[in-house]
Image (cartoon, rainbow, N blue to C red; front, side, top):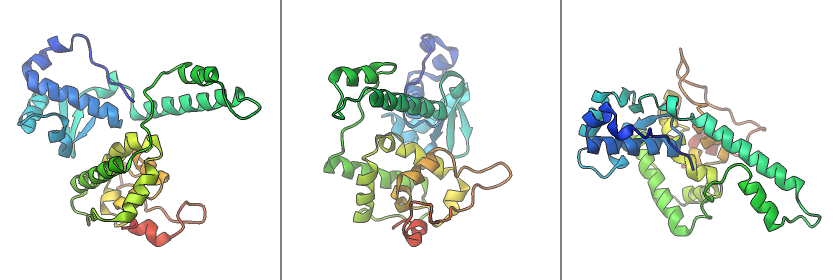
Length: 259
């Protein structure tokens, strides 16, 4: 779970007052979206109507731009000065990784001779520095189907020019069930997909399909970490090559995305 910061004088800020209550609510919903998916303040235009239950999302977004709370960028909007008041996605992930390592080290140090831990030990390591909400339990069949259909919908919105997968593709469901075993995927798949959609490399590559995205935990993580971002003076990375050191057993599936 990530958090976003709102000044305790937010409601009295001149920009907020000028934007009005509905636009200000859309702004708050945008903040929570950025915090949830670690987008560093970026909001894709296709997500606009989903941020809040309002009838005139575009009109409200225009108000936020006019008063200076949002900036227009390629493919959507940036929350103005988001990274001044909030940690970046990399900082959040680094903190999570450090906490996970600390917990693993602590448990290893306090593991009993029989390989188990006492309740006191488990509680101590969990609550030593950071107390977070529990990770979602392993997804049920209904939950998997819901997320699967949501992934297909978001993919169609972010990559409208690509050949779209069929909702009846069981191989994709199988891959998704495997990915959902990792809580980090559940928390970050949306942000990873959106970041990939901003990459010329991913948009132009026939290999970039839902099957590729779900094939293993390396692909979506690389997208989330910006490995495929457009580079200054170029259009991104060259397509990755499947070698004996990669996780891919079948190069055809790798480049075709298993679709």
